[in-house]
Length: 543
Image (cartoon, rainbow, N blue to C red):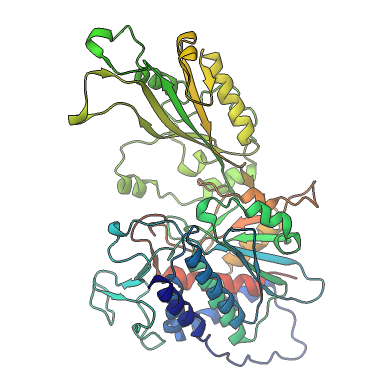
């Protein structure tokens, strides 16, 4: 039944027709070439008018796409998404290639050729989504549901919902009866990251309707295992340099700024992680008989964790900050210009204080961080017993900034543990090790990757900033995002060892989209804004 449902959903998506093109007005002979900013502004305006007349068709295609399960490990679901993407790109006149690496989810590439000699700018998004706990959802993750904002005047009653499974009618949309922009479409990947894909394709429809073509080679690159950590992305790039080594990247993933303003991210922190286990007695012991004599692993772990960071979050590990590259003047200026949303965030998160010594949120993101993801030892509450546990565990992740690497972090961390008298092992210790060493810690390192940043004053950075600003709202520019994505892979090019490819993060989803969580959603106005933004960039980027 599931395979049949996938086939039906795929067929419905493939059958959805792109809106018909509208004849473009003729340009007067001898007219001076328009600047990138003016082309962007005009394209954004045209895209808005086109979208207002085609909201129903856009949402119908979006809903059909969202109805396809898309967890990277689900081969049938991934295959259905790939087939659908191929059809969606083909309808827009793009040449399509499906790149494969063994059993890895394919990368789908769509190309729209520009004039000879033009540069290639690639727009990246991912079509896979996070696994989901169906029971935690209001509805089903892959049955899209449109819910109105409370109190809004819609064809739907305020607070009601309309399922948008394939074949279900949508509320009429158009210039005379537009969809409420505050309504939200609920489904897995609605915000992360299928919204960006649909917005790009709708922007191409709007450009075609206006008779506008990009002046550059436009490449759309859609990955299928970003939510699984992109383990094959590097191999794809190595094997397909002609397709995956463009002149510049726009990474269209993530949410806009909490203020609601557009966001441009010029970097992302790197990451690595470690699972840490410390050991006590080989069996649980009565804490009345042996407490204060047999070492308690919970106490040992607590003291060890306290040596890694202080109360303000500053890393205390010697040498850990040696490789950190200080922020530039341009980056510091950009941080100061970011709107202050911290009072509302404190209220939303219900916290009475912050770390960082009073520094603004975005300033703290320029520094490396150690996060204690979890601690496990013994039991609490009604399951607690008067026992010295046999071991205590902690899960730790590190957020890296330029020019730290996972290898340098590991080296400093292990040197720190050794200096405190810990014996490091990579497997559970045997009896001989237990009686020979006073303090034993087992480390299980996870994979990781370094941080990456594109200078804010780089020519591509300046160009993109101007084009987004041309739409009437100056974007928030952040030197780095707090989260980690393998942005370094986009910047690296073995053919250019002394240079990096500019890469900028351009998200469109609402900041409260429940990314990775139950009831993921997309605010419709964010989709509409995204269409205008992509249209502006497609029309405004220079040759």
